[in-house]
Amino acid sequence: MGTSFGSATPGARSVSSVELTDLDHRLHPISAPYTLVEYGDFECPDCAEGYHVVKELLRDLGDDLCYVFRHFPKDELHPIARFAAEASEAADMQAKFWLMHDRLFQQQNELSPTRIRELAREISLDLRRFDQDLENGEPRRLVESSRAEGARLGVRSTPTFFINGRRHEGPTEYDPLAAALTRGRRKTT
Image 1 (tube, rainbow, N blue to C red):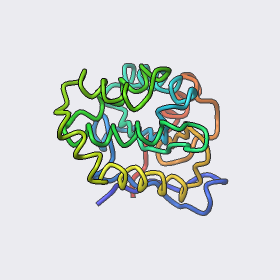
Image 2 (cartoon, rainbow, N blue to C red):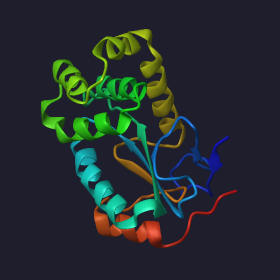
Image 3 (tube, rainbow, N blue to C red):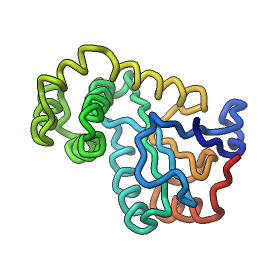
Image 4 (spheres, helix red, strand yellow):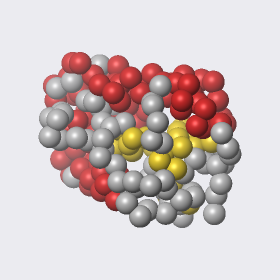
C-alpha cells in the first residue's frame, strides 16, 4: 500500500494526495522526513538541468530526502523520450534503473535507439533480456501508467515536482527547491 500525502495545491485538478507505491523508483527510504517526486522526460532539457539540481539535493540532504522519479514523456516534443523511459524500465528489470536513468540524462544530447542500446551494454545489462523485456510490453505499460498518473495529478510539463506531497509551483533551481523541501516535514496520513 502507498503512502498518502496532504492536499495538492490549486491547479492540480481536484487531486487530494500523491501516493508513493512499491512501483516507484525511489532513492532513500519512504520514512525520510522530506519527499521529492519528479515527473520527468529523459529528452527534456529542463529535466536535464533538474537532474543536476536533484543530485545536489540528494548530496546535501542524504537519507533525509526520499526522491522518486516518475515518467512523463512529452511525445509531441521529444520523439525519443518514451523509448528512453521504456529502456529505463527494462534496465530496472535487471536492477539497474538508476544507472540507466543517470546515463540517459548525462547523454541526453546523443539519445537515439542505437545509443540507448549502447548505454544498456555499457551498464552491463544482459542485452538479450533487455530486448526481450522491451518487446514484451511491460516497460511500455509501466511508462504509460506513470504518465497517466501524472496527467491525473495535473502534470502538463516537465519537470514537475511534488514536494512533501504538494505540487511545487515555483522555480526549479537548487535554492527554491531546497527551501520548499525544508519548510516543513512531510505529513503522512
